[in-house]
Length: 255
Image 1 (cartoon, rainbow, N blue to C red):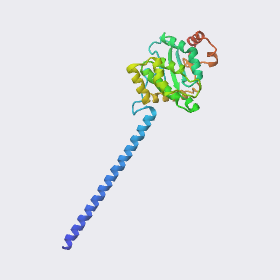
Image 2: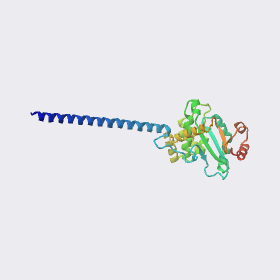
Image 3: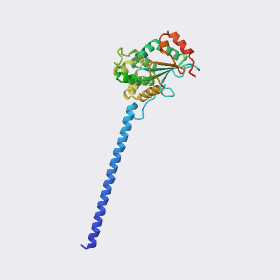
């Protein structure tokens, strides 16, 4: 073989080797990029699950307030100029249960008659204090019940079934089966409710409501506000239901 032919062959072999190296680099780069993309997607997916169920499905209750931090009872019934009554609550709070036992039916009656605009704003801070997650789970379930058209009845069922021992928490049987039955959620509505609860699709809403309440400097439950004015619980709990009704209707705004 002549020297020129050997040189040409050598150059061809070198070119082929360079092409193979470039191909390997491109393939490895593509694999690394794919791994990075999958990792980012996985992180976002898990983050969304932790926030409220499946990706992109963090459900807002149908009767949520415009700021998405509360649920309106009997929306559309409040007369023009009716007082706005906001109740900040935690479903594990024994004093909240006492408040509901004393005045819950009065508030329901006033909301049903359009005398007030009643809004419940759920908090979950007792989960940290009691080292469980029952406040969050109960809030998620209540929000799902709103989508089933039975928020108020389910809300009442939670407090009626609150464990006598603080911190014992609610069971899955209670939240998923017993309380819906008490609230009258049946048939397809029950299936929808249970699907909502199982997927925790309203969890993001409940967590957002809790964060908004904390940012609003609400640090205890129940906190009762009428037209933006926070009522003194010491006065509230000494009243009869009729006196409480009168107080609500006579409370002016905070300016």
